Length: 458
Image: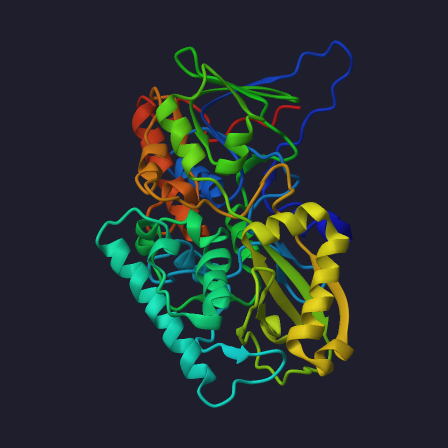
């Protein structure tokens, strides 16, 4: 990740049973860990799987390439003076989200996302008829997309968008494409879009990433341990890392589809074509937070108030004001524009954020603008994007990716959930399902025959 913000670590140390890589001298053979299940990736899916396996009395170890747990859910508690989610922030479909009851039981403060966004047109409020015009165009677009999805039409959103959107088209294409899904409307299946569970969202006062961090406490996690090779040619699985090998009956792979598609983890033998096709079809979009400080509330915004800015092109952003009641705002970008801007680097991202504030929020906001921080999930080698998106004809690939491979490999993560794809809740549910499948695969063992956690071998 780019910039000083991205090099700061959340207060992770001590929250999980960290199995650090051993300091090896020349000629020292790395230790071999032998467990029932090895989980690759300590994001929401990996943490959920490990918790489920541990509760079932199975031995498990989680290996994570980054120096923290949480994956695409990460809360910075240092930089901003308030907890700031650098990744996942919206708690989608709280009634169906398995993380919500766990967060509440752990004492986290959840509250509703304000529903009605404020419309801005070049720094001003809408004139008579403009809000109604926008709302009508948005409503017609949403209805057309959902009707196509309900009918099972595996066509792109762009194909069914109404032709009479007039000058609202760039705004609506951004909202339904880049902001909603991290891709352009031409790359998103109407059926996949329709399948996504949508209700009023919630936020977490302490940060969504902080919830996953808390739920990972006490688990056997090896941080800064990148997997280089997964050998599933024998009866079990051997996972290779720079700090040693892990042998297991089953491997649960929870890394993003973008990481899988990059081939940085080699599989021997290769992943079957059925799963490879699914990985390619469920590529990750791009979505980044540009986090700006606007002192003294120049827009007279309510805490967590959403804004919609009328766009002329795809080079636009969606503001979320006064996060948690602070003076920090998100300016969220997505799709191809976000990917190109992230690849251009933090200086270009910050320049766009400053320009956007001046042009779209008005002179008071321009004068109030202070620090700017940016995320770059797109360029993070261990993430490589936002969340999975099924293109036209690819909706069924989610369930195909979740199918067990040779009774030794299981894939989990938000990409394998057909109703909560793209969400932390979907990732969590998929991890629990994969863990249940792993328990069924691993032969029953006599009580007390093995430890419930692998030894901390150094």
